[in-house]
Image (cartoon, rainbow, N blue to C red):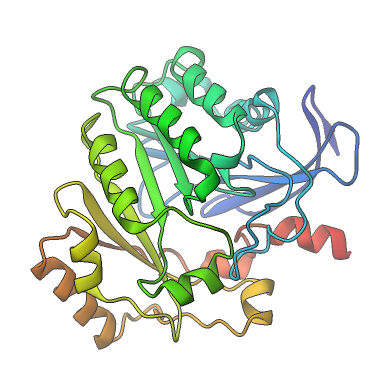
Length: 307
């Protein structure tokens, strides 16, 4: 075990060529566990692309059907505790990497729904001052709960001041164009498509990256390109298609990915239809060794709780 000012490291698992997952205990309380990750693309040197993924909450109040982090919500992490995760991983690497890396992504996408924690906004305001990294790219992944409207407006203000003209990745987890399926996958009141589209347009005005509409393809959950085109603008949004990662919860819920590594003809058809409608499409299958590591959200904490 490793003790820091912010937390105590309980475990480290994974493969440094793919992803290393840390589980930490916060505030000396065994009930307050969170994960954070250092990840990389095996095909890209770490000096070109470096990824840190942090938790923002202890568990998650949303309880998505495919995520092991939900169903055991125990509150928000503080700004210092979020920074502690970033600082710890930076400290495990040569300091020069922070200043020289071409893409330095900090993803608020591990345990928790970041838009339900006000401290995330404080972290986003201070990151450019704290880390002199020219390659910095913050990344927020959210299901856009209805309760996050004010948070998102504050994010937009930060985006248009601290990050104007700089890359900032906003990913909206859509997962299905069928509202009934969306509610089953993400059981929380969510902002509607039209309002999300209007927000994406305003967000895109602040910099060079389109807002990503993320679909983790699962069997039985429809994705209709025409519904996407009728609600979102291809000039401000792109579509990201990923497999549904295997987790304990997705198994218990009977969910299966509709995107195996060899990308079947049906997925090719979907990508072609979206491109014909003017959308940039990102087919992000990733490294299947991540599933063998068990590095999907919430899995490491769940394993520790069950051991």
